[in-house]
Length: 181
Image (cartoon, rainbow, N blue to C red):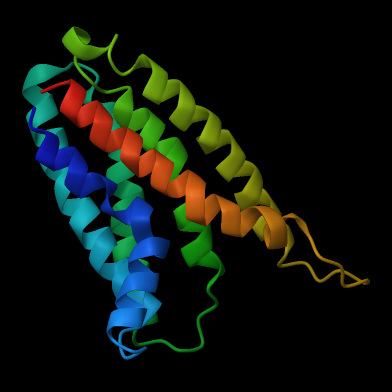
């Protein structure tokens, strides 16, 4: 296994930092959907290559398929959003919330020889995945209008999740790839 495959797979987890950097560098001419589309495409290619390598190395390689599916859905959805202006952004956020649980499954597909080295990253990513599932559930509850408008969990936890926890998952994927060369 080569760490480059997991480095490419982790690209989508840095979407917010990359969006901020690209927006500042391009003075706003390149939008966030374009950045998420490009990062999702890189992650999709990296995760497909990772799974192709895992087929020969691990009998658990199929656990990485949900991550590939979420990356593929993000590529298709953000690609569609570039042309369809009236589509709500809820699905984009829901797909981003599904990435950490799928990444935990991807990490659990590692071969037996390096399972001990990735045990802690799997646990941390799984806990972040649980948090992201709660946030996804809360995002779906936002579809139902509240009679009294009040700030919810997403206004406080959402930015911290996108700024800190998502890049942490990406960093753990990179470290796991380097640990299991």
